[in-house]
Amino acid sequence: MNFASIVLIVDDDPIGRENVGVLLDPLALTLLFAEDGQKALEKAFQVYPDLVLLDVMMPGMDGFEVCRRLRANPKTADIPIIMLTALEDRESRLRGIEAGADDFITKPFDGVELRARVRTITRLNRYRRLLAERAKFEYVVEQADVGYLLINDEDEIAFANPQARLYLNLPESDHRPVKQNFLELVRATYNCEPAEAWQNWPRSPAGVVRYLVRPETKQAAAFWLKVVTLRSLPLSPEATQMISLIDVTEQMRTQRNIWTFHSAVDHKLRTPTTFIVGAMEMLKNDLDDDEKHALLNLFSKGIYRLQQALEDVLQYVDMPARPGVGAGFSLADLPSLTAKIGDDLDIPAVTVDISDQALALRLPLTSLAVERIIWELMENAKKFHPQHTPVVEWVVTAVDDNHVLIQISDNGRTLSPDQLTQIWAPYYQAEKYFTGQMAGMGLGLSLVANLVWSVGGRCQVLNRDDGPGVRVELYLPAHK
Image (cartoon, rainbow, N blue to C red; front, side, top):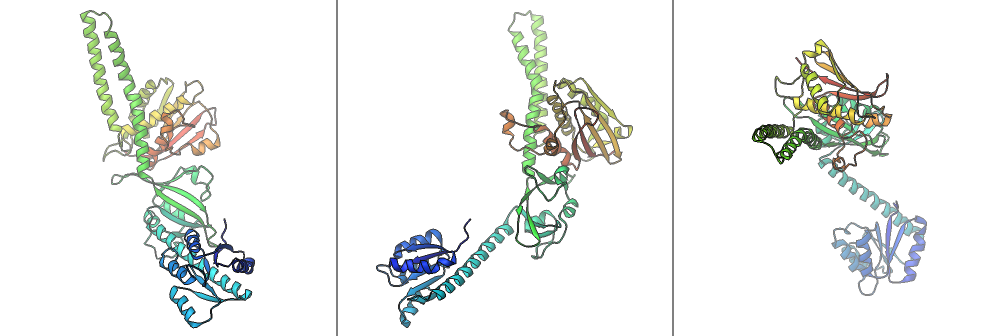
């Protein structure tokens, strides 16, 4: 990128233009030339030079008129103008001042004087423009809906715009550095997810997605911030990283709703619709009255099942993660629900082991949310098993009276370190799933993470150390 100052030299005399260019050549400027007033205006409006060296005596539009027109346009009004003139009378200089000239140089030029004045003016103008651009940038940052932070090498916040201060519960800005450790500050309010992505903070390898999640409560829905490391900034000895905090709460909710709705439609409606279509085909055969009556009864039951399935599907729209006061999913119901989903997915080898202490606890999740978690984990185990016949083991233990650890192990594939790091990252381009272009482990695990993180839980995937396959660990809050 070229940061050289731009100087526009305007003179109707080719030799005059050449002489000025030769004298200024040592300054490493970008020199532009115009042979009359009209072309000078056109070039000035195109490039907005840092300085105009303007000859006074030109045919047609003289230098005074060019100067007046430049000053009359808001976009060029601040460009410094030095008039080049052979006139030394007081009246001509007064006309130049009235037209808006900043300085005068009398022909013939003194090369040292010309370079000194041009160097000083271009530097001052470039500095003025930088200050103006900085003021514009600061205004935009101050008014932005995105939070912006500058983080130094010690992970201290050197700058936070008003939106970032709102997200981080900081007092209103007095334009002094916050001097608080970023991670310590955010962990007082948010969970840093996925945990693996935050281990090397603030470094940000390609593809890493980081979130700050304020878990759902009885009074408020979950709140999500996407954390993006924009670039290293050599602005000062301290501020080295620029961070943006983007509110993606609505995106996460929409992603969860779309994926959950699609999954629900797929497995809730497939069975009753298949049953109804089969019954309709059988009605086409020659049947006696008793057979028709029996078949119509089955058909009626199928319609009823379809109606119930549709009602279930509609409940998934904007499905809350957290139940109402006093409710929640009883872990005592986990074996039966897991067995049912195993049957639906044709996975017969499913075992559930729940400790006595865990049996008395409830998860702060609706039954619909737990059903979606079980379905996605079981379907994922089947999908990525080499023969699609996994052995799935559920082990649930109470960590204390307020937390449980749910471990789900299969005997499928072992994952690479890169897959383990990226496995929970939400995948926003959901259309790729529907068009069959989805890569990796799919959207199911991101939905699980979405639900778990929303209620303040943690999740991780580990390769099994006793054989092939993976173990999913869900650390969830619980209550009696």
